[in-house]
Image (cartoon, rainbow, N blue to C red):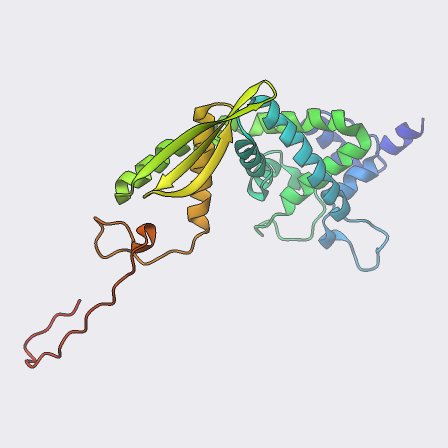
Length: 276
């Protein structure tokens, strides 16, 4: 009885939010005020209405619930992949860019309360989506929220396209080495069994130096994980000046010390010119 009172729309704004939830999320809100709070940006709260809550607390809750649901999704969808791959997939799927994209695809801005200009590029739509997930969790519980979130992601995100970058990691790294005349090798060994599953450990060696490691239930998975580890390590390093001789590896790769250039004697003739 009390639940039906909460879900009853009392004005056009609440009717719009309820209709949008039914059409887009396929749920009927049990507490419309909770969903309106999730869709209310702090810019929409007037100074004389401090009692009107914005969506920041619900965003905090939704962030935690979303991590759990997407973690479970990729865990079940990729049973042969290791922890490194699963962590990267979850990070990509819950990234601000991805959440903003989904939020715009479901037209969340139609039911948001915000005083920001619509042309203003920000993370506001994605934040509202997270807050909405927090409201769903309070209203419908974990299982109900999981059904909504999984359907949203499977409808609007191509998981295989997101995973493709990881699948091609080894070949991309080998190609990188060929273009730069760097020696790229993969070394794989058996670490033993973890329960009933055999675990392999792979290392990526670039010019004889280990640049990445990975683990997995198969040699292929371990090599892919190691390739991504090497890419991350290279991205985190500061860019170094290019070697003057592109046929050789940079000195820091093989332990050599860069020699100082010899000073040239001053030219006596003004007619001679052309510096480097």
